[in-house]
Length: 309
Image 1 (tube, rainbow, N blue to C red):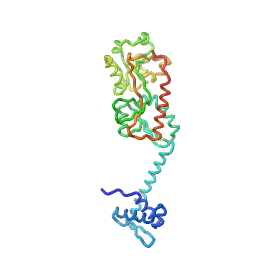
Image 2: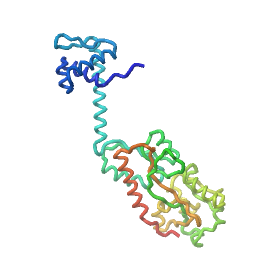
Image 3: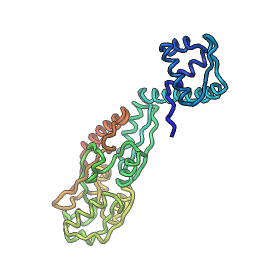
Image 4: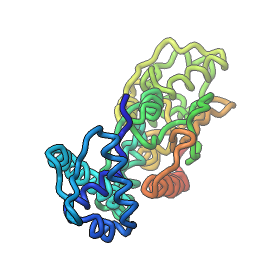
């Protein structure tokens, strides 16, 4: 395999072709005349043919030199375009941000974060990839996204997680549900209840299933949905008992259309984080996005969900 041509040699050749003089080319490049002469000689050795003829102090291109110049000029334009593109990325407000987020994060966290982010980076190109934790991990590892707002699963040694907040999964029921009148959730009644749970392939479902398995409660009667809004609506009309974090149903709990009850004596908590590949240095825009996620979720979690039993 032939070696890649040296960009400094191509630059010297382009300057020499433009100026027709080693002296003037050296002056344009802030080099000595001997440095330019050495670069041209090395380039000719590399390509295997003579590119310039010397007639006294004047330099003329050979036929091979004329052909090579067309390619050299194209290479120089591409290099200038690459530099201009990188210069743009370093300017405040420019760049690219690729974010993955769970469906819940897309609905309840991202809108506020992106509104704040856009004010600081108005020309940044933003791409959102929704999906549950398994997909987000695959997208991160495949370099298809830069950051992911997601639940933090255990055992991910190649992923760095910046903590955002913890929440607690609880039952949510309609206000006329018998458990509300009783003021408690009878353990023996859970297996007989129709539970409305989030997506069976999700990390949340896995946590709920493991929790009740440890509590020796068999989950055999449940409805699974891919939308927290849909879960809340089914619970409101009495078709089942939901399992979700109260902050997701804050409005409904405050207006009394839903009531939150504990799963049991032992709490089931989840960790929310912003994830990125370990060892990857975050750009300014990405660091800003992470900071906004922390600020927005801190405000979100500081608002208590009232009317929980």
